[in-house]
Amino acid sequence: MPPILSSIIRDEVEHIEGASNAQLSAIDGIAKEFDLTVEKLREIIKYFCNEMDKGLEKTGMNVAMIPSFVTGAPTGKEVGTFLALDLGGTNLRVCEFTFEGEGVVKSKQHKYRITEAQRTGSGRQLFDFIADCVDKFLAEFVTDYSENTKIFKMGFTFSFPVEQTAINKGTLIKWTKGFTCSDSENKDVVFMLQEALNRKGVPAVVSALVNDTVGTLLSHSYKDPKTFIGIIYGTGTNGAYYENISKIKKLNKIPDASGKMIINVEWGAFDSEKKIIPITMFDNKLDRESNNPHSQIFEKMISGMYLGEIARNIILHLIDRRLLFDGYSSKDLNRNYSFETEYMSVIEADGSHTLDDTKKVLEESLNIPSTTLTDRQIVKRVCQIVGLRAARLSSTTLAAVIIHCGVVECGVSVGIDGTLFELYPHFSARLETALRELFGTNFDKVKISLARDGSGVGAALAAMLATE
Image (cartoon, rainbow, N blue to C red; front, top):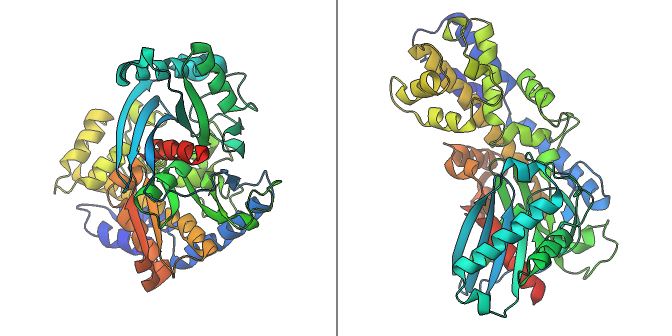
């Protein structure tokens, strides 16, 4: 079988109007660098399966395989009302979920903007802000809140690396995503939040701490009890799945060795040594200039936070060779992360003959003085190259988990959340194409579904399971 990526791009560049041989040769060369054959995908999968085994055996491994201490699975019949917090980026979400059985969920939720000062101040300041937001939410959305004596059970989705030691205990390993709050690392984030709630007098108990991927798995399980794997393909990427507790060798105390526990894989750090995944000069440039060099390599190649920057590096490379925009860039394009992944999405979706939406992105958003149709077609090919590799590479860790668990032949449901999977053109189709190449007809037994708002619903379900 010829390389999937190269053959697709080569077929397309033949139709670039007015492209020179040098331009066609450059695009094809870049496409080959980003190529992932089925054979290479299988090599990566085998390597990742070994990394999973290492993470289950010891702490501190690249693929951390963090026990969630969530040992129950929703049946879809659960009923009750629980609160959920979702902290993972520029907003804090406070939610109330009412489970009515039969997979039916009703919700109330509100977003609160997190300022730069709150992201970079003290940990106490951040958690006091969170407690204030919970108090405001309850006052606005809960009838007679001021007279209510009810103690609310709450699940906390905390989308940062933690070392979890119980369903309601977790030590922050390090801040990511622009957070640098002092006096927080190596401390129990549930304890810090509960202290803040108590200081404010908010009648809520933090019953469960979950990662957003664990939440996605639980949320989708409520709608489809056959769900075995939950995934995030968005600004970042990660996965979670149900593991046999007997295989989690690093657990000091095994609650029930015959049962299952959700494992938070933390696969964004996979291959940070750059041993198995083909790395290009454009990836190395991004990694070198990032705020965490030599870390989260897998995530940097497939997630929404970074894809635009990889494409920008390629575009600047072509400009420097005078193969694009007649050798001229702009101050905007020269700025790191200015070529947003959202721009890639617009460009890949542009089906017009003259690529008018692409022209708007380049000339109006990035202030390129002028572009030809050939320029715009080349930029679109660059986006296709980067987007296609991201989807194909994403298939490896999902396939590895399926293989590790031995569930493909008996059928498995996968819940996926995240804007990349939901909104980026062709991402889901490219992912499924790669999986079909890997599994053949057995892929028909894999059911992949969008799991919107998985992190919030899942946190509330974790609180429910923790109190049963």
